[in-house]
Length: 112
Image (cartoon, rainbow, N blue to C red):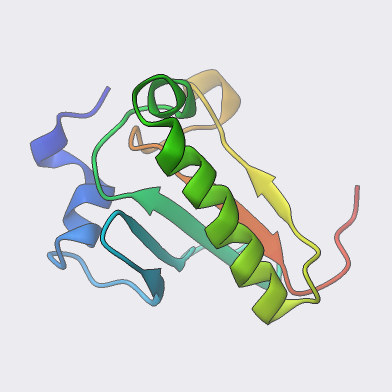
């Protein structure tokens, strides 16, 4: 697990690393993925550091619910509300940054 002080997403949230911001409020930050897998590929992260979605759900279920609402709003704006929402949990499942993040894929018809 990443140390919070060395966390890539914590540095993006703090403005230490540039990103293309899509959405921000007091608890949540969303930005364009630098290696998009769809026409619109946005990462949504809580500003408070949690390593995985399970940790987020256990400690702040309201924030998890809020992230799902933000994903819907992004999809409403980008592609008539249709979207895929993915959380990778653990290195073997493809998680490479251990700050929980939701992948919102939308903007086009997605293959299965």
